[in-house]
Length: 67
Picture 1 (cartoon, rainbow, N blue to C red):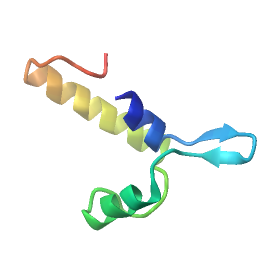
Picture 2 (picture 1 turned 30 degrees about the horizontal axis):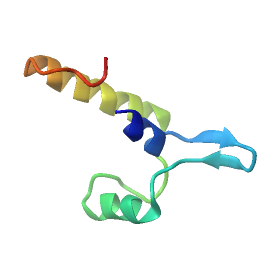
Picture 3 (picture 1 turned 120 degrees about the horizontal axis):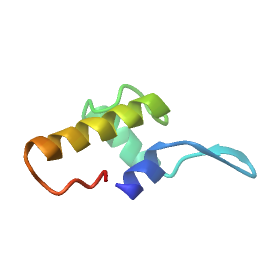
Picture 4 (picture 1 turned 180 degrees about the horizontal axis):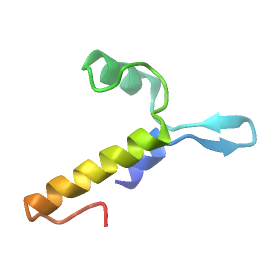
């Protein structure tokens, strides 16, 4: 879960906004139809995906990696 957040959320560093998602993986996600374009996800999209993942785990009564 932490790696997903690090990869997909932009943050500021000394040179500007950065994200850790490797470009090849970003392109593969677009090719697979998981993302619309090669670019960092909006924070609202990441929040939504984490919420959906959390709910899916709760419904299946599995350990929730979001908590």
